[in-house]
Image (cartoon, rainbow, N blue to C red; front, side, top):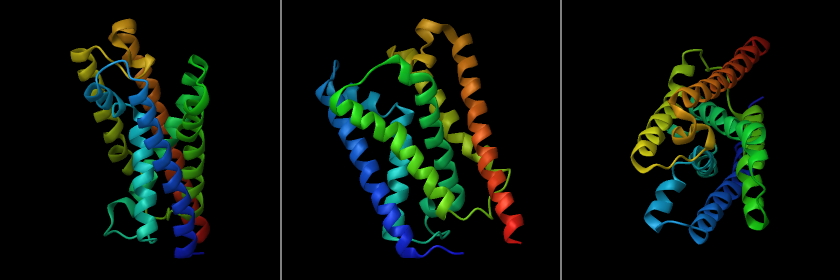
Length: 212
């Protein structure tokens, strides 16, 4: 059954408000608690995959609030694009819960924003995908295009890390781990990207069979 535009708009409005609030609040906190210059702080802010993925979620929801229909004339309302964003934000949640959560104990507003960025938004967007995103057009070849963003991201943060000595996550810190271990860690994350991609496309194939 096709979802009503009003339902998509309402669900997306909540997601957009929460996602933008979390991103903006994190920006505020990182500036207030900065240990380097503001330009460098802003650069570091946008080297976090968490931030980039949450921004993609916020943009996607905002587009669907303005135009609550999955049409090809709007990039961020395409099923393939929304599914890619679902993979990215799912990885954000999974990596944080399994790898990063034990490494630090945020307090106060930082704890609130951490839970929004790494827990609420991933779960909420996955739920949105399950409930509303059309899945019949998803194809196996989509996996290759979905991997371009994380691969480009990895190249950029490794190049910047080599030049500036800053790495946004401990498992990509070449200075401490060396390239061998970092590439091994990234290979494991890549497997997770492929796994989630296969999971989503398989769900699409299954829904196609059941609807047919």
